[in-house]
Image (cartoon, rainbow, N blue to C red):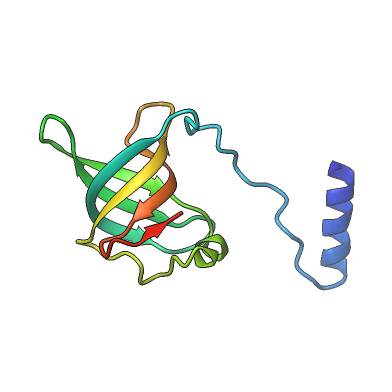
Length: 122
């Protein structure tokens, strides 16, 4: 497989084209056996490849504000789900369901988001 991919990339480069990316990170860092639901305020929204990110401030059980990083998919996949650059804005209150990071840091991979207008995106 590796030889085939490398040969294809070399052929594309020689033909004056652009070789496709052959690698992508895994989702091994996320605990896909657990779902966490958070409601928080959007502090930033990064709508760019290779991944869209949503940043939230969430109050924990002690009342402290914790900043969460929510990884989403690439722009093409987001657009297929009707998630665009204008979907989220700083100050919006959203509810995110995600698979949390295994190491306990406040972050995860989204599975659904309820936007400020009440629309659910999966």
